[in-house]
Length: 311
Image (cartoon, rainbow, N blue to C red; front, side, top):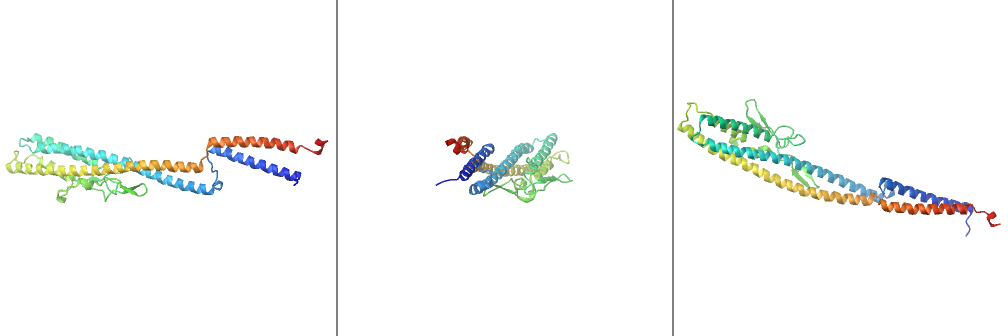
């Protein structure tokens, strides 16, 4: 079979152009680190890579949620610990206030410290997280959990239960605990811990007659006995919340570890589809360049031949 000079020339030219195009493609892969320069390079791989990227984006968002939620619970836990410390001191003051040797000066001293504890607890109840949200305000986290009225009384200003935040594909975790759920006493008539503190302060007022009567002493003893019971109740409620939040945090840590592993797996799968093995690509490029140089040299020699070379 004979090939005309034009056909041979066209065939060789097209072969070299194809190899030059392949070399350019490999050079782009090395420069960008990407095997897929466009979806048309490998439509199936490109589609799978897009699905993996979406899964990675969802996993990263879940991880951000987990980190934010864990930080919020950390802040909440510190505040709860502070409340526990204040209640322990309050219990000591209640025991001192039950003493029959209580003097007028003792009443003033104890009353003053109780008022200070009240302010400390109000501040702790209105703790904010890094985003400025009130951690114990329930669903309405943009405003304080407790507010002080014009007459000085402190009342609940939050609303509902805290929102639940998605962590992982199926997990919804409560973002905190409503202050009302653990700072209110079980007996509704007793109100909240702040009402309890107001009663404590009232019991520390000096007797109107200057000296305490038997009835007033008995009322003080009875009041302090109830005070100790109420303090224990609130402290136990706070302890339950601390245990619940600790369990939530443990679950968040476990889910975060799972998400970390998942993102590593997804990234590896995406890289296998999209990224180029640079070492292998360099070897391929060098091999292709060698072939091109040889082909170009051969093409030049053959193209320069004519019948005069045979004479």
